[in-house]
Amino acid sequence: MNKKTLGYLLIILSAVIFSTVELSMKAVAGLFAPLQITAIRFLGGGLFLIPFAAHALKKKNRKLRRSDLAFFLLTGFLFVVLSMVLHQMAILRAPAGPVAVLFSCNALFATLLAGLFLKEPLGPNHFIALFFEITAVVVIIQPWQQHLDTMGVILALLAAFLYAVYIVAGRRRSAEYGGLVITCGSVLMGSAELILLILLGNIPAVSDFLTRIGLTPLAGVPLIPHLTWAIVPALAAICIIVTGAGNVFHMIAVELTSAREAAVVFFLKPVLAPVFALLFLHEEMGTNMIIGIILFLTGSAMALWGGNLFKSKKTLETSGKP
Image (tube, rainbow, N blue to C red; front, side, top):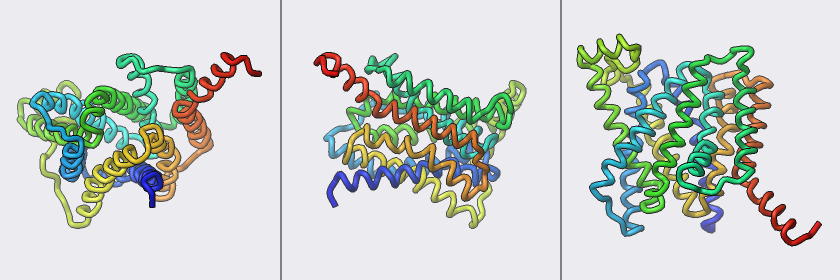
């Protein structure tokens, strides 16, 4: 098997794994507080990533600097503390399928933010993609019917936006160290920050203050959850497979193919996740969901490959060919 073929297989495998995130988190949502499961998930996943990240650093002949600690504290806060906690709160309030599709907007958000702040080129295809994905969100949500929890929708979109901010914030150092190192450092620091937040929330005075200002989900969360042997395999799968292996496979796929080809993962997730939710959680997939997925795929395809259409058109116009 050549490297390219292996890369494509890893793209498919990581797409399947990433498509089970909302499904897995929904399955254990009633057993853990959002802060609890997020801290456990990313601490376990980060520890799993350490040897792979160390190998990536050695391969690039790089060493982490002291200044990287502040960077990882920032990206960990954006990724784990903000984005993933909000993502888990969205899963508690809305079905897993719609949350997965809405969260997939992060890829387009990241493209637009990179264009604004990193001066990466934005073409007409990106704005066409934005139109399709906004339309998809409206069709899926159907605000005129209010069949989805409004706060769940807002939390999912906010989580997607903050994840995009994390991606853009880590873009330059990712080129230096590799995505695997950035992910490992960010999730470990983020989980440490969450553990600190949980500990602070258990101080009576802090807990009372958080409750008074309406931040009840942050108050009095037990650091050590009550575990039974029945839940341990699912928890291990979430940490090792969903969080750890999914990232490893995706990053290796990027190295064996290209970042653009590996981005197909985020093209496949909006299709696979609702199907998995239908099969395993028996969530309904209405006509609006199917139309929304088609619109979302159209937008994603335009963002990923639409630039070639405009390049081809510009080339034809320049050459004077019909």
